[in-house]
Amino acid sequence: MAIKFPSVDFFQELARRMQANAAEFEKLGFCDTAMGIKVDGEASHLYALTFEVFDCSDVRELSSPDDAELDFTLEAPLSLWREMFESIEKTGHPEPAFTLNSLSHVGDRMKVVYDDPEGHDKFYRFMATIQAFVDQASDIEIEWA
Image (tube, rainbow, N blue to C red; front, side, top):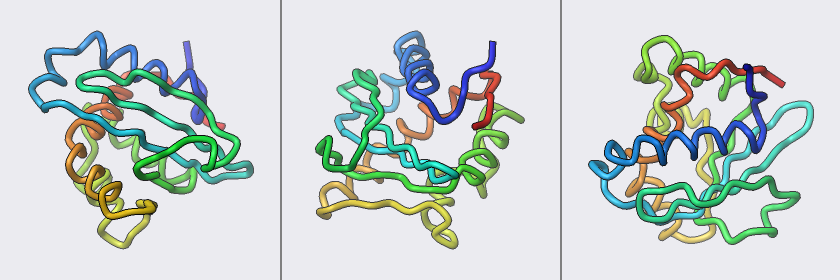
């Protein structure tokens, strides 16, 4: 069954998979951050994901960035999110050009938005966990918005 992207259901499925693969995430170390994912398209969508220790404990869609206290937000157009997830689908991991690190550094195709340096630091500190979190989409049939 296909899951629509972007949607709360999509990120909740990733959170469910994170719980099911707890041992893999424990190897990466704890992750304590509240992050945003913004998908720009015909309509923009903003999601808040809360990570606590080895778990994604909350996923919700926000009407405004002011609706939650986020450490940082990853912002990209729907087309870039699609390229990234299609790359992950091929081998279970993104090609080097489509890792969160590359997308946010090389050419700045993905923006990392933050209000203070500690929020920015959390993106880098917990990047391995966040990358592993999105990599779990490798076998999800995605219905693109």
